[in-house]
Image (cartoon, rainbow, N blue to C red; front, side):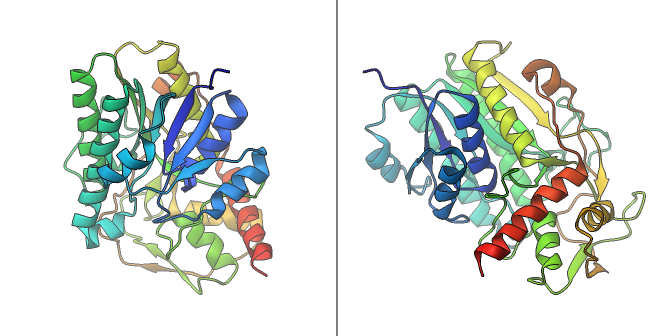
Length: 346
């Protein structure tokens, strides 16, 4: 009996990785395997995936910075036709505080997974990039042709370097097709409320800070800056639902598997195209939850950009992708996930 074609997801226990595995199971017939060393996630994630999909996912607990470990554990896999590479550290403040940690982890792991693709003749690769590569752009909304400035944080710099690495590798390997996906700000949770964003340490992303403040885990949250040149003084971001991001990966994978790509490196923005301020996001949450948040206005945070939002027309046109969730729906799913966690932890 022929084994089904397999997609390898690195960082499969993470926030976006786990949601993408769910969408791969729902939308495709591929077999899915994961690599995740649980550095910022939990093995319970795979129980959550199974409860939603009915499928048990095999995870290899590997540090991708360790090439010997990759060779030892993954050498027997022969049916992989594509890799979706999420595995990376992603906190802007942490990257500012410990830049070498980020340069080592995010770059060494990418080098090793690209080497693995070459050794195993895996021809299809999706790279998890970030809108942080645009920095404080003078051009808004940003397009895929926007000139990238100097990065505002080591995290953003690792994503710029990562994109260049994938481009260079693709250029020197003509049968290798890659898609670079620049996410804007993923938020929300699966509509089942059984899986969502769950950082192991103190969260640095806005929405889990909001939901944890709402239930009292965080006593008071802080808005980082009120003097930006925006409509209410707080930072502007393009918040996009995690399920919309996950679905875009399925479309991107099919795009190269069906040979619809025009070159062997493709680049797309994944955002809603709408900028929302931090204060507007807070007010959206208060509206859908009925909970008044305890927050204060604080100083700017190092590494943050004032405003960033996307032009997403290229992804709509080429990937046939359309984000479905608005900001209130994003906040509602995040809130239901937080309430599920409260019940689970009783």
